[in-house]
Image 1 (cartoon, rainbow, N blue to C red):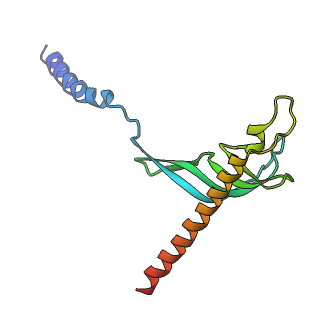
Image 2: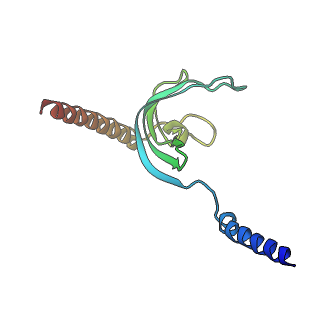
Image 3: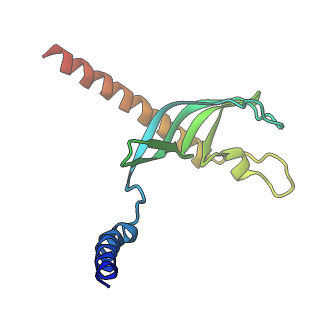
Length: 146
């Protein structure tokens, strides 16, 4: 009887201390940060059954960066504003991965004309890009002159 009581006592101690460990979810904690991407983006299709055309352009897009406790980091770049080329098509402005021509196309499948507002928006984006790049270059050179 004495050995049975000692065994029960030891088992109770072991199982009692193990319970919080089982209750604790060992899911790695994640830290998510939102940001923005501005730069040249190139899309290439490798080994696909249906190859997509090469796509390159100047892009402004949202980003999502996720870091875990074990050190892994994943950065994803979304679709935003882009001025660039897609395959052999002429240069075009796209929003959310769709060109303004696609957004403005007629119901019967013909290409529609771009509205004046779209041209103005595209021009404003290009001017903004030029101003931001120029300001970054000026600030960078001012930091080195000190």
